Image (cartoon, rainbow, N blue to C red; front, side, top):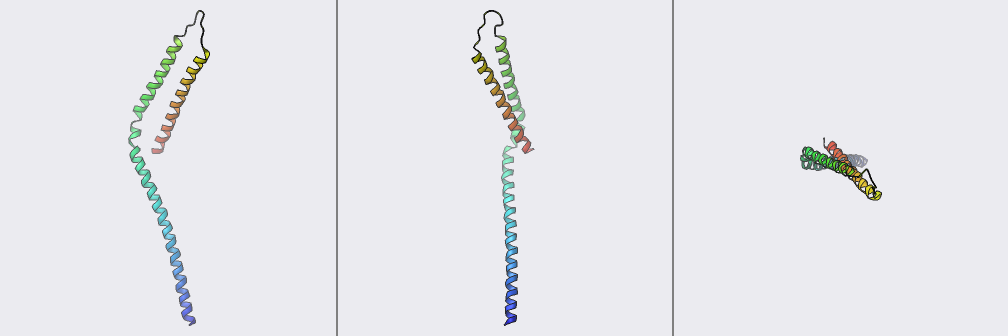
Length: 123
């Protein structure tokens, strides 16, 4: 009877070790599956986004034209200001116009920085 009990305890211990080993393998496989799923999701995102860096030259030209137009408009408006005689200027309106131009330039610069960050992530 003692031999049978010892043998059963040994088999039970062996089964416990096997179950523990199988649990570890399941956890490893789950982690591997999650990694593969994330890789697949990233691959899908990259595949859909790949054409966009190719369009950068078009976007850059549009931004450059926009900035050139804003600079030209500001320069032209400053050149039209009378510099002789009895000139009255509404300082608040000029400040609003310049503030608006600065905000627009800041927004464009911010968008370009964000775009550069996205492009660098993909490269």
